[in-house]
Image 1: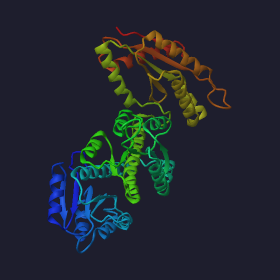
Image 2: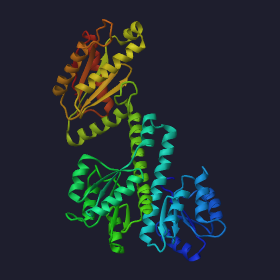
Image 3: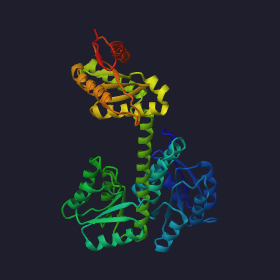
Length: 455
């Protein structure tokens, strides 16, 4: 789904009044709407319209909602489309049939608009995440061990409920659903638990003895470590004002006691699915980003990323006077290492030098494989004399290291060093000056550090 494209919803109901109600609510939210009057039409329209969510009535002529859902989930072209079954049937067996047919969520008649929109928005988000993951996996598949861990992973749920009986019932239901469940009796214990372990979902009672449930939600959403955890409220309070306030606070779902086991499992399944999709996407994005800025051999940042950092450092220097220094390191006689010992030995030397750079520089500095056997380090907020100390330490560490097992091969480096000057127009000016210093080190006998200041 294109970022600028309006989400698409297919509304399937044989009652005109119900269709009009759905259309009015969803149009106000900017959704694109298509309608179908029965299950057979729904299957055909889903294939052409390719909605992001389907709202499907259960009791319809020609093809009921259960059978239509089964057919859509069996078709590869439509199997990933989330389906919300809209039903006035409240028997356990009716919801079980819906789960077995492949439905992703339920909406009970009569429903309120806020609940409708919350469920639709949630499933649209899942669909969008799935599309992003599919696109990314085609470009950069997840590592095999990551795929395996995701396929065998048992989601963790934290139940926060002061009523021991309800707490135990929730644990029993969720245990049976295949989840790993921890329970705590109040908000204070919940916060202690979250410092030690991050669950995939929190079931939260509103009326806790030490803190209001929504106050706890606000704390969770303000903490980067817990802000992405989906929260389902379980409460005896069924008034619309509390529901709306809960959703506005950041709650993902809302269940009114007494909660039926199948509905609890259905709601948990939808929200866990969304959370895991978000985590998988985040991991994939992190991996893709790292690969886009990294040199594959050494693991250091690449030249392209260095240009971005250089532009930023130079801009900060020009505006605020925060100095930075830069060094270029070249491995002496590297061609002879490749020629005499082979390219594998040359790669060993490159990766070992890269490791020395990682070990010796600070976390605020940036080490880069500039190309071939040349490396650059940008020392942020550092004057040349301070950078000289680190550069000499790096040079000595290379000189003392035995790089290739079984080979009595001495490795040394020549280093050019400079710091930013007011006359530097671009990062290339700084790099050229450091490069000139490095060649001075070469001409002076190699295995040394030379610094040059800008005019």
